[in-house]
Structure formats: C-alpha cells, structure tokens
Image (tube, rainbow, N blue to C red; front, top):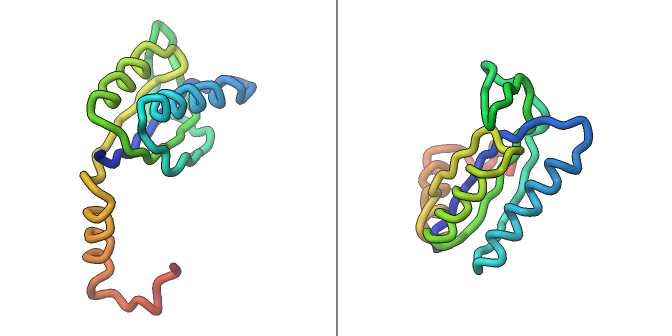
Length: 122
C-alpha cells in the first residue's frame, strides 16, 4: 500500500467538536477500508493567506491539520470524494510519499548523508 500525507484546511468554529468530528470521520474512513493511520498532527488555527470561498461561504481563518496514512489508491479516490462533499473542509491535498516504507527510509538516509549526525537533534 502506498504511503500518503494529507494536509487539510478546515473551517474554523468556536468549538473544536467540528474539527474533531472531521478528523474522526476521515480516520475511520481510512481504517474501515483496510488502511493504516500513522500520525495525525494539528497545526492549529491560522489566518488564511487570502480569503477563500468554499460551499458558498467565505473564510479568513481556518484550522490546519495533517495525517500520514497507508491505503489503497481506490480508498484515496473515495476519501477525496468525502472531503469534497464535507462543508467543514475548505482545501486539502494528498501527497504520495512512497510506495513502501523502505522507500521513505532510503530518502531519509540520503538526506542525512554528508551531515554530521552528531550535530543533528534526533
């Protein structure tokens, strides 16, 4: 299964139950289709670089979050459909990080080559 990273910009609400519901729905969709969720990170509430319109509403601030996951390509298509229809989602993008965990580990090792490993904060 390919490994993906999704970055999502969600509409900001005063209570965080909306963002919690969106994240839970997204995670459950991946898990129900046989995928694996590796990490979920919140980047917090931020001002948007420009006013954005989605589902007939204008947004100036939003909640940013990311998710690393493994899933089949057909599940990715259904996840994109789910995100497109959800009124809490302003924008999202999915990046393919690699086809196997070994591919990502090799890229990380190549990035470290030539650096003094003792000076890195790992």
